[in-house]
Amino acid sequence: MPLEACPALVLNADFKPLSYFPLSLWSWQDVIKAIYLDRVAVVEEYDKVVHSPSAEMKLPSVISLKEYVKPNVHPNFTRFNVFLRDRFTCQYCGHVAGTGRDLTFDHVIPRRQGGRTSWENITSACPACNFKKGGRTPQQARMHLRTKPYRPTVFSLQNVGRAFPPNYLHDSWRDFLYWDSELDS
Ligand SMILES: [Zn+2]
Image 1 (cartoon, rainbow, N blue to C red):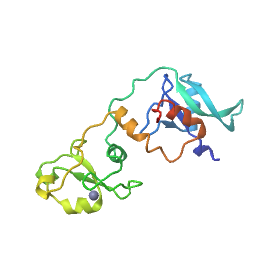
Image 2: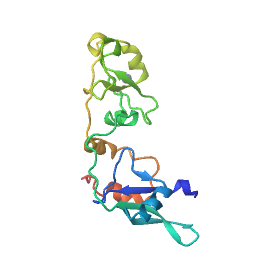
Image 3: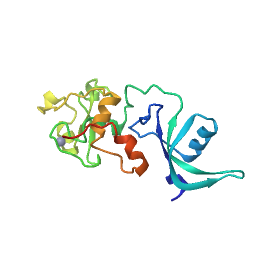
Image 4: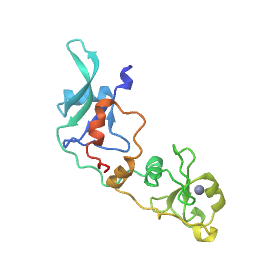
């Protein structure tokens, strides 16, 4: 495994991931710097060893910050986060796009009518619905919007995100990502 493929999961001082979307991962170089500066503790390690002229160490796979950082309440307004908020589902017809590739953004109030590019005015739409709606509002196009777009909190996105885990998870990360998830009865 190349070193580039060995990032470390970064936990806050409370042992929860610093961020879920995107998952807080640091490159091994940043990790070693942070250890050297005594800012983090090593929680889990890869089998891989790195050497310096004077020392050798196992590459950390999970680290935790020594000082607690207050997490952001609101996630970044990104493509992925909008799709995640909408559960990768077209908000007009309910079509579920497996990977998000079949999804587009729709300005609920079209830009031409003064609609902004914001959490509250952007929704996920399949290409067919987006085309059908064109430059009209849902009322003008007689299309029903399933949920009104809203600005999510990190917590609400995290809850949705449990159904959509990242593609690549190292085994040593799993406990920290899912220990606090709700149990299905
Ligand atoms: Zn649709």
